[in-house]
Image (tube, rainbow, N blue to C red; front, top):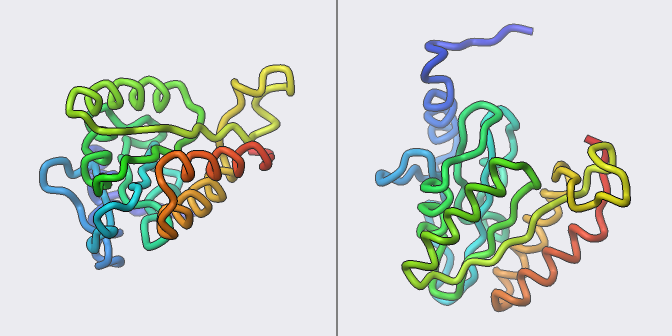
Length: 189
C-alpha cells in the first residue's frame, strides 16, 4: 500500500484541503480550521448535531456531515481527540437555537474535551447534551459496558439523531432516539 504525504506535519491540513475540494457542500470555519460543517446551515430552531474525533478514521467523521446527519465536526490530529476549543467551536457552528446534541465515541480524550467544551458552552448559555457510543463488545465485558468504545454504532447514532433533528424533534427527543440507537447496537471493533 502506498501513501502520499507531502509534509508529515501538515497531513491533517492536506487531508482537510482535499476533502473540501472534493465536497463543495462542506465548509471549513475561518475561526477554527479544525471545524468542518455544512455549507448550508440547518433551519433556525432545529437541533444541531455535532461529533468529532481523531483523523485517520475516514470516512468518519467528516464523511457523515450532511442533511439529516451531522452538522459540524471537530477534527483532531491523527488518532488523537480534537481539542475542547474545536468541540466548542463545532457546537457554535451547529447551534440554530434549539440546542446541540454531541454524539461521539467513548474515548478518554473525547470524553475529557467534550466535557470541557460543554463548560465553555454553558458559560455562553448554550444547551448541549451528549450521547456516548459504547457499542464495541471487544473492548470491555458486559459488566463494564460503560468502558466500551464507540465504533460502527456511531454511524447509526448519527443517522438516527440527525434524522430526528431534521424531522423537528426537540433536544430531548434527539437525545432519546440517539441513545436508543446506541443501546441497541453492538459491534466488534
